Length: 404
Picture 1 (tube, rainbow, N blue to C red):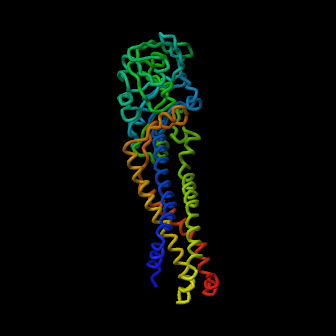
Picture 2 (cartoon, helix red, strand yellow; picture 1 turned 120 degrees about the vertical axis):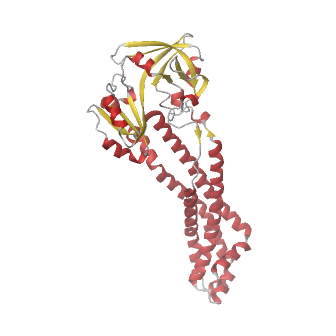
Picture 3 (spheres, rainbow, N blue to C red; picture 1 turned 30 degrees about the vertical axis):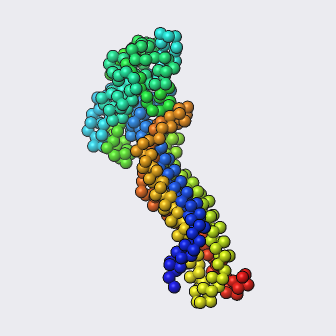
C-alpha cells in the first residue's frame, strides 16, 4: 500500500482542517524568515556603522589613550606617524587606513545657546568609503577647509544654519584652554542618534590648530581587504612600544558579545515559535485519530501493520507542517526582498536610544534561512505528529470497534 498517496488523500478529505493547521505553520515559517531578515539586517547595519564611524577593522592608538578612550583624552595622541604609515603601506592585509582626531568641547553661539559637542576631525577624501560626508549633507556644503559641519540635531538645538558662526572651546594637548571661531559650512544627518545630537566635524587643519597638537593623530582606523585576516594582521605588526592595535570586537566590549552570540539566541527563539505553532498539529492529528477509528480498524484488519499506521499519521502531520512552513518562508523571503530594496526608516523610534543602530534598516535576504526555517518547521511538525501517531499505532481492531 502506498503510504504517501494514502496520506495525501486523507489530508484532502478534510481540506478546511488541513488548511487551518497548515496556516499556523505558515505563520511560523513567515515569522522565522521575516524576523531573521530584519534582525540580521539590523545587526549587520549596526556593526558596519560602528566599523566605519568608530573603530575600523583594527584601531591603532597609544596604550594610554585606548584605556581611557571613552573619556576622549586629547593629550594622549600618536606623535610620530612615519613608522606606522610605513608598516601599513607595506602590509599585504591592508585595504586602506585613515586618521581621526577626537575631543570634547563646548560650543558657543551668537544667539546665546551653548552646548557640549563631540569634535571629530576627518579627511573627507580619504574617508569617501567610510564616513561619506558628502552623502550626509542635508543643507549647505561639506567644505571643511572654510568651516565646520554640524550634525542635524545639534544644529537644530543651537539654532544654527549654514553661514552662521560658532566658537568652540576645549583643552589643548598641553592642558590649557583653546578656542577657535568657525563658520558653519553645512549640516549633516549622520544616521546615528548619539552622533546626530553632538557631532561637530572639523578639518585636520582646524582640529590641530585648536588642540595645538602638531602633526599627530588620536586614532588610526585600519580597514582590511578581508575581515577574517584581523588576527593575522595584528600579529604581523611591530608597532612602537607605546602603541597598541586592537580588533573592533575587542574595542566594542560587551557589544561584541551581543553580535557574536545573537544568532544562537535567535535560533532558540525560532525553535520556540515553531514548537508553539506545532501544537496545532498535535491537536489536529489527535482529533483525526478519534474520528478515524473505524478506518484504522479496517486498515489493520486488511493487513496494514502497526508501523505503517504510525508512518501514515506521522507523514500526514509532517506534510501539513512542511507545506505551511515552506509557503510561509517563501512569503517571508519575498517580504524581506521588498523591504531590503525600499529600506525601513526607524528614525522616530530609535532617536532616543544610545545603542548604535542606524535609522535605515534593510532586512537581509538569504536563501539559507529559508532552508533553515523549512528544516525547523518540518522537524517540529514530525515531532508533534509522533504522539497521535503512536496512539493510532497502539489501537487494535477490537478497540476501534468498541469505540464506534
